Amino acid sequence: MPELPEVESLTHFLRERAVGRTILAVDVVAVQALKTFDPPVTALGGLTVTGVSRHGKFLDLDCDGLHLVIHLARAGWLRWRDDLSGAKPVRPGKGPLAVRVRLAPDEEGPAPGFELTEAGTQKRLAVYVTKNPDDVPGIAALGPDPLHESFTVDALKRIVSGNRTQIKGLLRDQKVIAGIGNAYSDEVLHAARMSPFKIASSLTDAQIADLHEAIVTTLGEAVERAHGLAAKDLKAEKKSGLRVHNRTGQPCDVCGDTIREVSFADSSLQYCPTCQTGGKPLADRRLSRLLK
Image 1 (cartoon, rainbow, N blue to C red):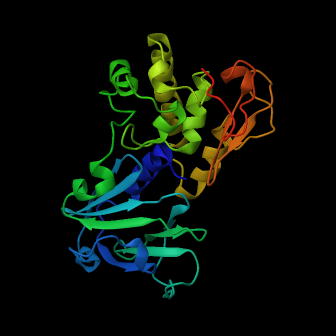
Image 2: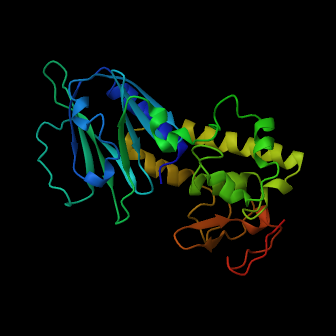
């Protein structure tokens, strides 16, 4: 799943390539991906991309005041094409292509653009056309951005205070903190040497400070690693930078212990027992007691 660092990098990538170009057309292949109808998607044709920004995991292309907002969900991705002039029409239901955005060429150059694709059968990729990004329900409900200067230790302390949620779930809750998903929550908790099952409200002031440092540093370093990369290279960069997520059975880079996993219905978490749980492996989710 693309998370804050990847979406931030895609934002910079599109600023360099799409800003200043006119939209020729937006072709919606997967009708279920389009979540709005007024203004119609056809209203984007002829408008110029004037800016690109990020809201949590949402991409936002400002097109002369009309916004094309994209959420890549779990299995979506953005693929830049240097030349879409010869792209063949695609019929709905055929392949992973969901949306194609065709941009005007330079004076005599190719016509570039990008395609939004989604693998798998759970189609959750979402596209909105709106006059105000805050009208998108997911954006309106976002918590603070962890890379914004307002996300301080005191801000995090207010978030965890009185919250009986397990810290892993709290970090993933977009209404609490924007942009962190399954992968980077594993990475943050490993860096903070904290059990994913620890209850948020039980954190001491020192642990809150450590967690804040882990959030800001982990995400900041991931953004730096991804900066300047082409969209096609971001997935590989993310994978190469992960210390615990999706590394079940491999040695921990910090202590050498074997990285373990807890599986859930539709996801899993990875952690290092020595670094995070006092050497105790977490039991099956249905039987484990919360490690403090």
